[in-house]
Amino acid sequence: MNLQQVRRVREQAPFKAFTLFLTDQRRFEIRHPDFIWLVPGGLSIGVAHDDGTAEFIDPMHITTLKLAGSNGQES
Picture 1 (cartoon, helix red, strand yellow):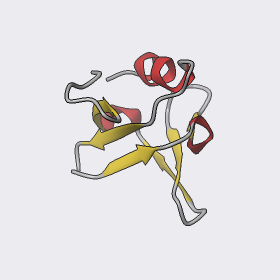
Picture 2 (cartoon, helix red, strand yellow):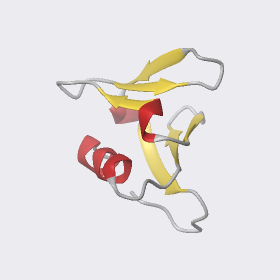
Picture 3 (cartoon, one colour):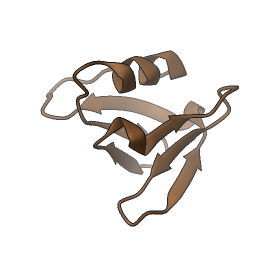
Picture 4 (cartoon, one colour):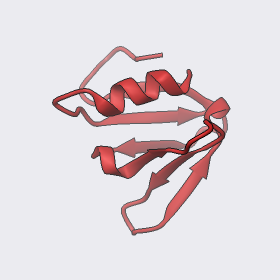
């Protein structure tokens, strides 16, 4: 998975919710494009949580990106 793939899904119109799956078995549901930030330089991705907190993840740990309502995966 690379940042261009994440960017493409984030910027598609109309936006479709998606889930990022990480190597450590965590997953992040992205329900709106404002809930994910691609940090300049490509060293991290910011993800907002429902409780208003945010977390930065290393894009190297993203294994799969799955669109909501999809049986397949974008990877």
